[in-house]
Amino acid sequence: MPVPLPGDLMVSVSGFRGKVGSCLTPELIGSLAAAFGVFLSEDGASGPVYLGRDSRTSGRMFAQSASAGLVSVGRDVVDLGVAPTPTILLAAERGQAAGALAVTASHNPAEWNALKFAGSDGSFLEPQRMRRFQGLLDETPIPRARWDELGSIHEDVGSIQRHVDEILGLQVLEVERIRRRGFRVAVDCVRGAGGLILPPLLTSLGCEVTGMGLEPDGRFPRDPEPTASNLVELGDLVRTTGSEIGLAVDPDVDRLSLVDADGKPLGEDMTLGLCVAVALGRRVGPVVTNLSTSRIIEDIAREGGAPLVRVPVGEVNVSRRMRAEGAVIGGEGNGGVILPDLHLTRDAPLACALVLQHLVDAESGLREAVARWPEYTIVKEKIDFPRAQIDLAYARLAERMPSAEINRDDGLRLDWSADGQWLHVHPSGTEPVVRLIAEARTEKAAREIILQARDLLLDLRKV
Image 1 (spheres, rainbow, N blue to C red):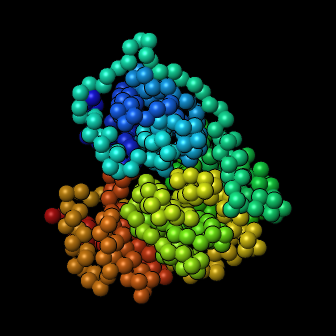
Image 2: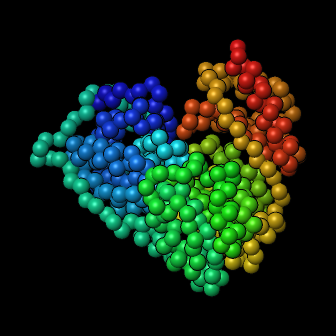
Image 3: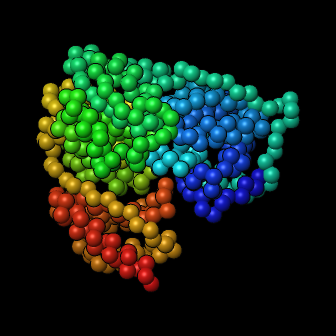
């Protein structure tokens, strides 16, 4: 079913991502969705395909194209409209779907969009299955259904409320204790899909909510990635409203970042750390995270008597290993939290509830709760670097830093455990860049590691 892919399209294990009107067009989205529908049929998957999108201005156009592609190959579609990615995947799993499609570029700027693919279990396709799907794109033309065999389209307007209800029903949460605490909360949804789920969830948890960017119109007022540098206005809102905590999510609501009562952002890794402490405080078991996540997760897991397993970057890598390990909780240091008791998907609304539970357990504010663990500083940088030279870069870095423990499971991770320092270098799966991530006890030490690595890569780039 040959589907020619533009050369500047970002192709990764999670799907296909690009700039709107350039490499990403309605025609391409429709063809990819149709091919996915045929792929599911060849795999023997029955049931409809669940389809949802974040709030990007291009989202409706691409969702309609995806819907048409699926119907054209005889697939029924359940259209969720604008919804968080975790809501889409939860609905697909509970609805016994054949699979799911999410039209979202997650944290990328507004000019980007993407199509992401999930299976009947509500998780993104594992790498082997995704490669098999991508391989089909080079084969014979897509077999279209006859006029009397076309699929149908049904709308589902209740998926967000069902998501809220399932979170409120989790045994790990003591909902009445959270409600009695009466948190005053400020939220920043950056005009993404979070504005549809965070206010009702937090209100159900007894919170007094003040928000910004709640209109889900895709007109992002800032860089939509919820990193510390992008949360200045949320910090101001926390201070002016006297809120105890600030909560910021990305446009498709699978990542959560935190701001304390003084308006100061915490590292994204602390979102996962606080949630891990809640889960292990109720049941001990394995914790899974990726190679770019803070050492603080090791400290918290060790305190809770649980083993920590590290895997390559990527939600699907974490979720699949969690299933294999029977993990209690897991996630990624970008603010993505996965709780198997709900589903094996990064879920920011879930993370909001778990963070509030942590503050109830600790009987403290956010900054005080975090202060009980060692302090680390992560520094992240990204640079343009030719993929053809990346293996050479790994070899040179390992030579230049010979005292480190080396892990090559995902790019290159150099670990100095005794000093509490590490460096992870790997190509991004969502942008045409190489990511440099370092952690140390102080910002100065972490920046020195980043500087050494960056200078070496820049020198190689000149060759």
